[in-house]
Image 1 (cartoon, helix red, strand yellow):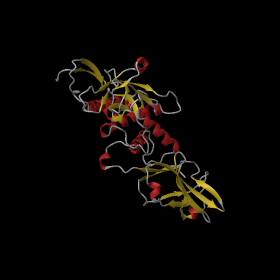
Image 2 (cartoon, rainbow, N blue to C red):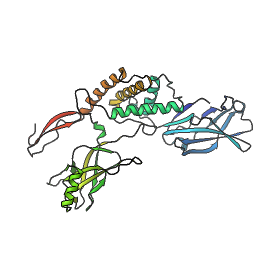
Image 3 (cartoon, rainbow, N blue to C red):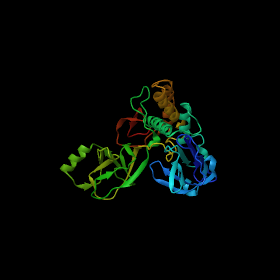
Image 4 (cartoon, one colour):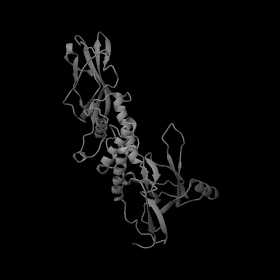
Length: 365
């Protein structure tokens, strides 16, 4: 059996999966007098479809098929499929090489995503660039290489280098969500969410009271020193961030410190740079959407050119930097021209999205 991918959308059960069973030496298996079962597993070995009877189409030709049931294709993902022959209580499993028959169940693609990059389309375009087939019939090793290139290219886009003439790397607006949490009286330490990467600005009280609404950032050392002098409770005015754990056996958690320790329940709003998950058959769509599809694809081509054509920093890299500048300019249009009014009379130079600008507190432009 040659390695191949069988692609289905969620819920597709009309077309069976078929195969011709061959031994390692290429001989067709004569299925006369045998029964054949079908099984399917997730890539980590978890059973997706327990062994159920398949249909022998032509015994002497070794051809079989299995009619998908709704439960087989109810969730998106990549699954390894096998046909198991049973003869006199003894079994053989095909394909002989594990993973050579893959079933890729895709989430239904919405109409407005037709020109937006996705995990399957990026895979296909990278394979085409490398001179491989576009029909998805890749070996297990080729699929692993495609995923490696794809996610390296995605990370290169998500974490860009500073553009020429700029000293600070751009921070994407689509990676800066807003969340809220409630403090707990007499508790000053809080775990930030797993997706938390870095703060964007100060914390804000989620209330309309005529009181100071900003909690300013400082260092964890300063809060420790203040707590050593005075650990009284009150309305927090300072916060700091520090790693909660420094180990390599679990994802690192960021811990938030508040000072003074809250004396009541307060609603807090915060903005942050988010971590990103790798693209996969489950995480189908890169963050950023249609506006950055060509930049992400060019980043993947850049990685493929460097790794497999031994051409780092070549023309593909130059094209990626051109696309990156276009994406950055498009993203900057999502940033506000003003940050609002504050009447404390200060003038501060801020650096945001790779550009410096002056914020004047005390008058509107």
